[in-house]
Image 1 (cartoon, rainbow, N blue to C red):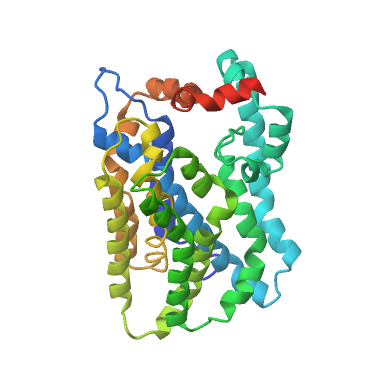
Image 2: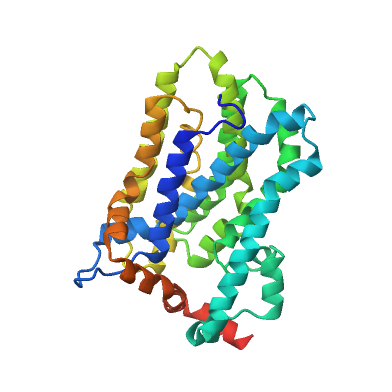
Length: 349
């Protein structure tokens, strides 16, 4: 297992690929400078970038347990100090981004008419509670939703750590509990999908993905994976090379699912039906390669995770910068066209 404070290069690489995938999903132009439109496959891959967010949630659990688990257990780190280290700089950065985003909305009339939140909504956004009330709410700096989704997990982690410590050195029990937690994360969504004859609507996507408690099991998966990585060296059933190959296979399977699902005809359809299964369906693929910090296959696993988005990344990075900026500026307007009811409701308030 990697030591606390040690840079995990394979995770750094994986985060880079996932972050670029998310950026392309939000801001990649719908057509290039020569007027040619993106292919259906590229559009499907980039619009499914929400799947990358789920992997970030799992990785947050892994890194949190790696960085703070032993220190909390040995009492070399107090609970108060943990909360300060884990959240202070993140919250400050989020507030700066939200204030800047709000200023942009106020300055642009088109944004102001459609997206200026009410005072009560702003208070909920800055208090990181708005998505508990209405998961689909637009808040300044929309990625701040991720922080709101992770806050319950970070707050509850010291108590989760105590429960996980009881499984120390027991890889079999850890794997079993990972499967149980995965069933809690993905089972209800899959059951709903099957009961509704393969249909899930956007409201169900917003609730099962953007409602903060929905991300608690995926964070717990990362914590369990971190504890498992400490127990694996004592397990002789599978060598490091074997585990690394399993990691490659897991992420390759996840990338294949992103690529091979039927392409939606519109961006709005990308967050309905079978696409919604990607919000939690891939969460079990993330923990498999996480422990492999020092072998070549661990790096390969990180690269494999990006296969589902390489074509989109290529188009995103080769489109002219002015075009990218133009479409980035129009993201709020584009969203209002995809989900017009959201803007109408804001104007009513």
